[in-house]
Length: 282
Ligand code: FAD
Ligand code: EPU
Image 1 (cartoon, rainbow, N blue to C red):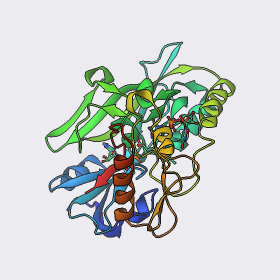
Image 2: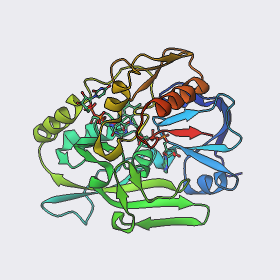
Image 3: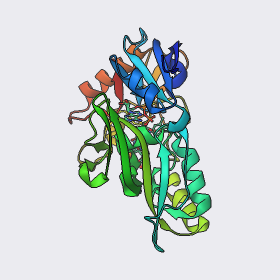
Image 4: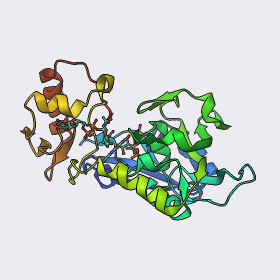
């Protein structure tokens, strides 16, 4: 045994929605432990900020990135130039909000648009999280991806990406990345972050997995759900937020099935096809 920490735990503890039954959680701290964890059917968990996990839990292993995958090297790498800063490796398990605070302090610009996204670096890269002010791939220089077939390093130009999407296959694990950012000042970076954060003023401060649906054709899904008259609709302890209709919130003790029922109601009542942004496990 290589020494990964294996525990049976409720996944509600690891999701921002606060919902989810038990699974075998493998916390890995290096590539050897990760290889072993990937030997049976698995899912990779990041910050749990885009997940609705079934109350019955999961039969598959759930892998969490710790140890060397939670380290941050923000020393300037030799690829850096007077204009551009290229970082050392930043682990896929690093919380994005803390990384952004460090970039602000160092006056490094490029990822300000992702401020307020409560993800881990790997999860944010996998789905190219962001806002209209910018997204994760804006600041990428290199990625390392692990899959059962092995580990490879690649450039973002090897992978098509777009709005809330990258071509990284499901269950290929973003183990670490290197950033390419512009040299600026803490004041300028801070001002850009504050501007992006202002757009979140109308979002609920409750337990939620973020926006339920991607915006169809650039129209706000929240606006469509609002116009369908669904704000404040409640099923069990889950509710469509009265503040922003694309957020389903947990009033305390919500079940995954309550959230599923609200998603079905939204689909039935909004006439336009909308793609789910969350992941439903399983
Ligand atoms: P998780 O929720 O843990 O997992 C989501 C998916 O990513 C799963 O398929 C998982 O397997 C995969 N994944 C996780 N880690 C890795 C990894 N290391 N390698 C490969 N795949 C991985 N999103 C936005 O884009 N913009 C926003 O403005 C935004 N605002 C939000 C506000 C709130 C309050 C909340 C709760 C969420 C918000 N989100 C937003 C949604 C969420 O933060 C993003 O979808 C984020 O990318 C999820 O990352 P995570 O690490 O939490 O992934
Ligand atoms: N609106 C309504 N009613 C609502 C919600 C919104 O009328 O219930 C209107 C607003 O008044 C505004 C417009 O719709 O005129 C757009 O709303 P907002 O600025 O909140 O943006 P959004 O498109 O609804 C997007 C992202 C968020 C991101 C914010 C801020 C998607 C699906 N959503 O929301 O991302 O935080 O912009 O940058 O792209 C997420 O992906 O999880 C997420 C939270």
